[in-house]
Image 1 (cartoon, helix red, strand yellow):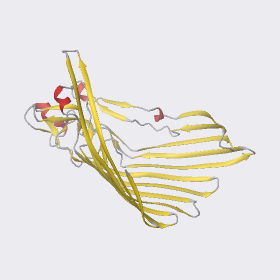
Image 2: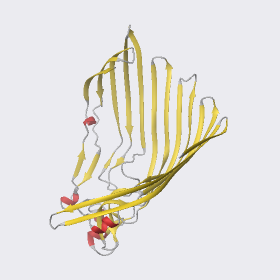
Image 3: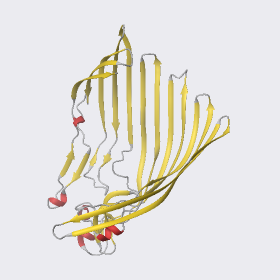
Image 4: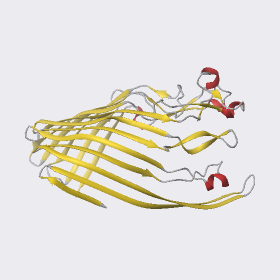
Length: 339
């Protein structure tokens, strides 16, 4: 259900509510080393909602504030360690409460557009692939688990300016501070008990399987603090029915870690990628469009994941990396046709 109410000519209130019932089931059959058959189902009912207030400050300036409740359903993790006990207690649902305030605006006869937003979101029972201590057995189990509590906060911006008819400048980005607030029995990365003994401690004298760390206050993996994009686009006629266009943009991302357990070896420093393109197109919305592009002009090397395989190599840190296509300069030609 969604209700929008106009309090005054310049003030609007929106209220939304969702009630959902989600059912999941699993059929699992393993034949080696012994036969294991599991057939279970589960269901859950959740309430999600949103309240938003909008206020017109000027004809082309609007401020807003909102609070919303989010929901991600429960799940089965049918990895090699799947068991009847796990099937009876699936990974709990994840919920979030999100707060946002912001402004959307246009200035100078719509030549400048500026959108700003500040946000804070609290997550409960955050779902992630991790190893957590099983209090019943005193061992660590790897799989989809509920990490605990997490908070992400920051600001986002979008700025577009068109000082002249044929040129547009765009600048957008975000500052994000995403931190774990509660994860008292997180796994330790391999050899952490030797390199950081004060952080990785033995919880029950069970040796490596009982070593855990408290990750409260640690930055979340895959969450760089800064991300922004600066670009310019030129579009102008060159003859009757034919337009030329050119664009260049620079994409930056600050330092990011790829390991949930704060492994210092799985960290990549900040880097920026410069791209450019040049082309011709028909003046109408239909027809041909020819583009020549150069991506990663400076040939900046980067990866999208770093993994530590020390557990397979006698506690010696051996790193694996995922190298994307864009991690080296490449040139291309693209032909489009719209009809």
